[in-house]
Length: 614
Ligand code: F6R
Image 1 (tube, helix red, strand yellow):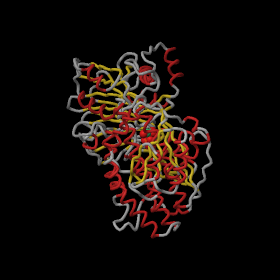
Image 2 (spheres, protein in one colour):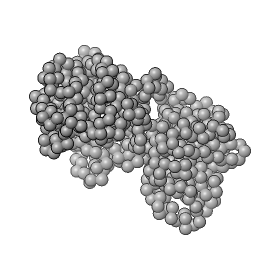
Image 3 (cartoon, helix red, strand yellow):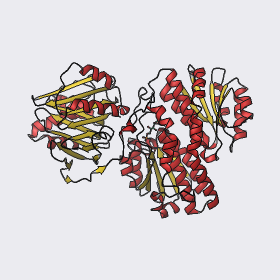
Image 4 (cartoon, helix red, strand yellow):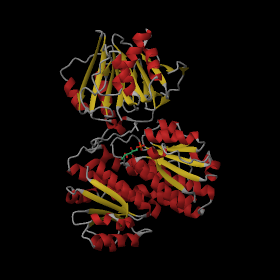
């Protein structure tokens, strides 16, 4: 949901800012802009509708020199994607330029007040209201920029990560955040500002994560000074990043999504490393062991998440209920936070979020913590807001996920949930140690089995050509594979823009079966596990109505092969780990269909990777 980047130092700011915008483009890509202040007492803004490439094209013939600047890539909230609505925004006098990630909820009232005082607006954004308000307060109270920002932010309801430049001031950028992420990079005589560490990592591995309602004065040649909005001085630990630059490149793949699909054997090994012992006797998650009593006494688990992470949560429900015998509810964070939910102090809340910044999940976590429940986070981005706002947790450790459609983060969420369920089951003694050992051994084999499935890439690519022009798809699964049917459908719709629905296979006959005809491809997950016979009956029902069935089956299957139109074979595994395998061919199928349709796979329309607005 918008990426912001800033630089102050001795180098030319423009190339650093543009490269940073490219790294953050996954957060939004409908328009982009840049402001550079130079010693000639100028504060110039350049903006363009479209991608960062369009901004670069626009800037090609311009003089954008200067070694201090801010830049923004936008995901529209208030106001359509256009040059006028792109950031940075000037204040009335054009003395200030501001970029913003987040939403100003009370912008309409403030805007009207400013209009009544004679301010003019050039855009339809909420952001422009903030920069105008800062200037109004600064001039009215005759205060410095930092104080004006503090006062203005005290009047704001909503979420923000902002960076502000002032005309004629070439030695300072002022930034602030609340509910939207902001990282400061500390280099040698240079400082970086960004929504996440990806634009910073090639210059320095030393960062500071700003906390909510903090403001930082980032000055040339001196360490950032951090204050709260209420003007209390803060000190911050400098954190060393573990990210490396190759994780941010495509590495020879045509798209990040394909690279991330193929990385999964390795990312899952990384996710398990140091957590499952060599002999597969134990799984050690310190986040659970350190709070063992909370888990042993848990009355209930509530899983909170959105989108793909919510699908992982559904698999988690099956895992925790069957292994730990703890009742589980899986909630959309966006519904939970506004529902006045019943939360008991002995509930365990598990928040799942790849980015760790999803606004609804963060708000749901805050609500749960206020009710006294113990909150466990499963996040990928280290140091993210959800990771920092939970009582305990486990990182998925898959490295940066850049493709907007989540793939490797999803499978790692499933692995973390599996390890959690087995760790709790061992402590609760709800399943025998021998069975836990067998399951851990099988979990360890999953990366090799995924490697085998990835060898079917060509076959799945060929299959995708048959279905590229279908208008609708149905995905069916049962038991552990029901959430994978939902996830398969979501992957297809978000990157190919084909309408798709996922269903528990047996629900078909309660309505959706009316949709089946020769034009309707049905993807059925029919592996030889718990519900095999039942799913076969469901496939028969589809075939009896002339539906076209693509089935994901276990190796050496003969029955489904004889009924389905097309099959994709995968290795056998335990019922509970099936989702880790069945999801892989569905990721590849969506990917190839989207490529055939010439969709922008890594940056599908209307989406953004990190949904920091509600
Ligand atoms: C789909 C996708 C989204 C995210 C959702 C939650 O491929 O990526 O549905 O899963 O926006 O994001 P996180 O996990 O960052 O909270």
